[in-house]
Amino acid sequence: MSGTRFVVVKLKELIKTVVFAVLGVVILVGLIWFFLSLGDNDSGTYRDGVYHTQVALGDENAVVSVTVKKGKIEDVALTEVDESTMVFYPLLQTAAEEVCKEVVKTQSLTIQVSEENAYSAQAILEAVAQGLKAAAK
Image (cartoon, rainbow, N blue to C red; front, side, top):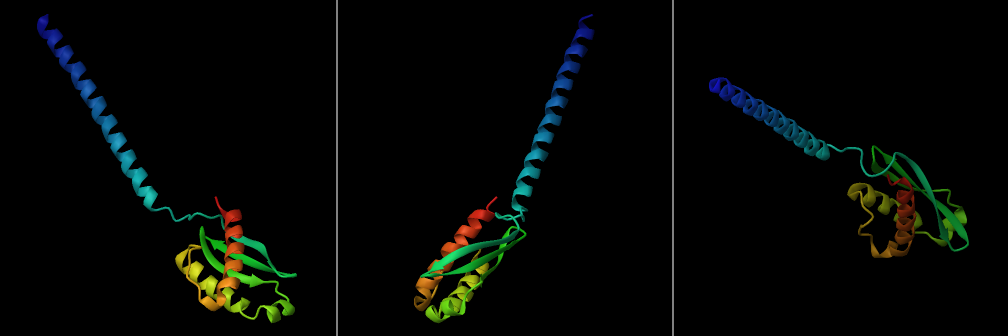
């Protein structure tokens, strides 16, 4: 009878060992899957769409459009600008193109702009920041 008990105790230990081994493998596979899926996050930090923000330039307004695709900034454009605004702010279009190029390239609002476009670029960057705030997940 003691031999039978010894086999039952060994069977319990074997079952516990198998259960813990399977549990360990499941946890290990889960961790590997979790960390691999973190690096494959292509969804970006923004919701897709086109976001419009108004920029006050003296008495006139202009609209800055921020386009987001696949969670990344794809385009920044100056839209709905009056001719009178372009006369009073001749570097506005140049600043908008420079900001667009840098923001799309770096995917950040921390960019370097030329000294001659500093004021216009700052106004456009503030509008882009407001648009991205609306696009944030």
